[in-house]
Image (cartoon, rainbow, N blue to C red):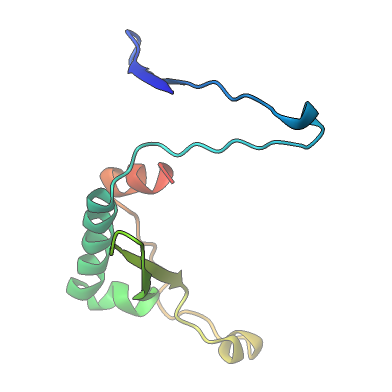
Amino acid sequence: VSYQNTDDGNFQVKFKHEVKNGGDEEIFFAFCYPWSLADNSLLLNRVEQRLVEDPKLSRQVYWHRATLSHSLDRHPVQVITITAPLTQKEVAEGAQVEDEESWELTEEEAQGLRLF
């Protein structure tokens, strides 16, 4: 595996994969932009802090963050739920959110989420 930043500002990754056993099986490759645990924690902490500081926003967004387990390196594996605050029963009964003002991420937060 090799990687580099190109002159035109792109990030380029090159790798070679050898197929064994005749290559009859379908193979999938996945790549994620380099994103550290620290980057992820900072982003999630900023979003969580905005919800804590803004009571109006916290009524519009249900947010739950919990540690599900820990990795072999003892890093937290988190489960994060972000959804509308209405319950399924309220939705079934036709309830509406009282204040429909939208909430927008900052450009930095949006960029961080797009990287996933």
